[in-house]
Image 1 (cartoon, helix red, strand yellow):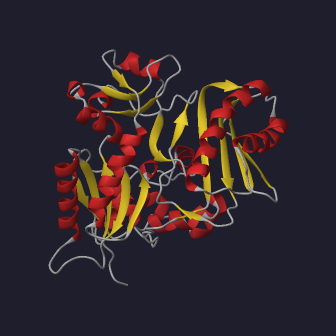
Image 2 (cartoon, one colour):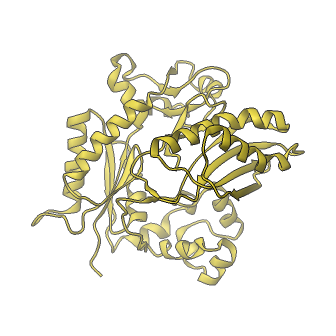
Image 3 (cartoon, helix red, strand yellow):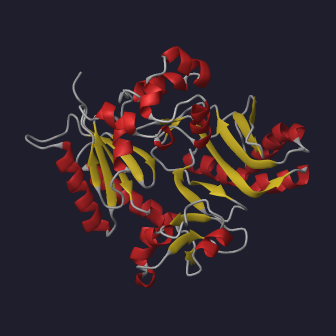
Length: 369
């Protein structure tokens, strides 16, 4: 097979950097995008704030304790989307194969689009330079022969850096890496792997595929491959959108049906607003509940007609949730997803953000697809 040339571009502290760019008074200061009130949550933090231990999803009161000089600025998602489109235009000068992961990061496949004598590393540098020249923002880049390693590489020289992992280096790079740092391995999976004696890529590579499938289901095959530096997933420029959803993690667990109805209302409103914007109305509604002990439950129901309104979506969501309340152990997260589209759309239009606590609008730098 032809060796692929994959680049992962990741903007540096995107939301906070945009705010510092547009407001000179914020430059050089610890900045948090979000709301500083008691139940607010940090959506993004500048690198100055990160040096104090401030990060996204951190409660605002905790962030202020860590950094009393922290400056909060409310999020301006319409501005972030506009800048994201500007950056996407820069990508398009080099390849049509662009897979956005969120407003601030994307995969690019340059394999068949390099000019004579040009390397993927050179193109990545050109892209970073163009982003800075045209937006005043910095980006980090990872260059490798597959998506997994390109993503891992972009984290190695942040902020404003570039890192390359060649096919010869790939297996060794993975072997030395803690699995908790693997893209695609979340905290719960990392903890499970640790209990099984898997703490590094080398440990993961030593596992038989049957063992990984037994303990991790379908994901086992993926873990087996990436442990060897292998990832055959293509860059998909027009990912078919199969669902539209959002979820909210609460600072305090909820127990009562009344509290559940109050908390789910902004989630429903956010999801239906996205359905309207994308003109996609599915017939299946799924609710997700994560309890205080991190046990997770999902319930889904499909009706003959698609969701017709926010009120309709609210009714369907409550019908699925009501049997689960009241809850003795409390609920820390609720989510709502619409799927079952008759005419699937495409994931190139970003669907807002996941959000945390009281729907203050503070989102993490990630697509809520």
